[in-house]
Length: 148
Image (cartoon, rainbow, N blue to C red; front, side, top):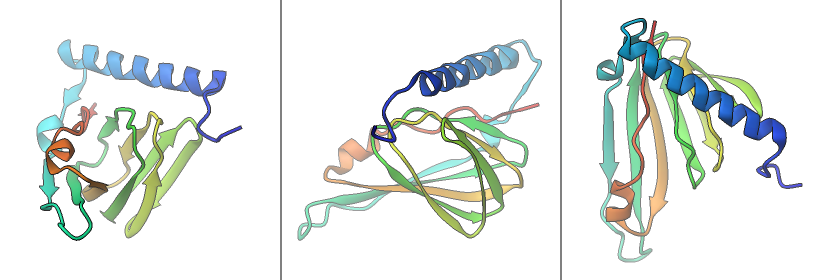
């Protein structure tokens, strides 16, 4: 079985993450949970298409306050994450992993993940090549960063 093959447990995990995400949004709307999205600054970076290789690079950087939680979207492509400072825990259907700067890890495609900033994480980058810089600019942005 492919490690990304859907299983009942993995589908249930994703459903529980989506439910938690929806509940957090409702709690923010009711004023029961502080929305710190404005403190989670997100910057996109694009390089021009390299004529020799025919592709461009895309990266984004997000600053996460300590205690913030980001439940991300399910991405179609693998991408690199670079933790430049701080500590985060990443929870997926494969379990929880801790990363402390300096650290690099691969986010596999098709996974729903939650990232919790164990410490202020002022620099978390993700990168992936693109053959089309316009297509790279349409990639999904980061999700909410609520904090109690």
